[in-house]
Image (cartoon, rainbow, N blue to C red; front, side, top):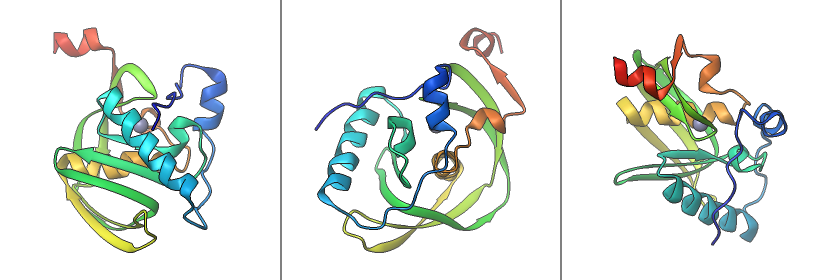
Length: 160
Ligand code: ZN
């Protein structure tokens, strides 16, 4: 396994990749398994809760979410149900040193394939719902700063 480089929005070349739409995975190959393993290692190292393949420069519809015991590998994920609304402070490993207030659904249900190509659904509320939405946005080249009503630097957050 390997720790991958996480693309940064502040770097124009990285941002160009982050803004592209990712293509669906049409066959789960050993390469996809290696990518999932490397994304996991990268996420652990970065101490994040979610990572999308485009953030490591791979324009494929793959995300991982790891919040405590809730761990998901999602291939070709789609939100099939959502309801309610929540507004919380959000950050992104590709947008370091910034946080923003973003509105998201309070509940979402996602349909995806696991690493064996088996379809499953996952439901989330609160932080988990937020994380699903955030990571799936990456697959369409959308960053949370596009949706944030306000953004803050760490200093500004401390003052609050
Ligand atoms: Zn992100």
